[in-house]
Length: 257
Image (cartoon, rainbow, N blue to C red; front, side):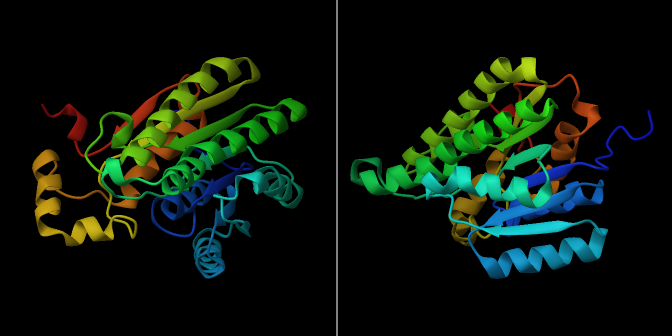
């Protein structure tokens, strides 16, 4: 295998939702491959802990930016702050996400809009800011959007989440086609059911957890670390001919009839 195919030395990555769970796992993995990382999350304490962990493990430079990405009007300013601090971003990982579980007939416009803002609108805005920066610098870039099994199919009580994640997939494919001329690769990862704080209520529901296992050929919940290999592939030279794709890391869920 060619040496350095997965190396990210000299690259700078921006990872949202990086305080815990999948975002933190991906940020750690990119840093282990040589990237300096900028972390965005709502909670200062989580960000500081993540910063210390990554710096201790890897020796890479880590910046932290506390922000609530539901405040979409501030997203452009946030990206400008990141660029000023880092000197530029080569890799953008959109991992921040939220959900609400409620019968669709009872869903409020406010809860629907918040999920859409966090899961889709801010993704578009960060992708746009990233594209403008890459064009101005005359350099290529990589965007990795974290999707979901809901990019493939839905289940009851997650209308807003499913709409937002299916939108992420459509956005990923559209931007990949449109921005290939700028050397910007845009791909998505669709996690299966991953054991994180966000899914803790589902894990604690014995009936639901058994349903998850019954639908997952590998017969376990995923771990955030299960996604890092795919993220490294898409961020590195190993993914040079991949764009507009979604990779389901789901323990075989989408392969099962």
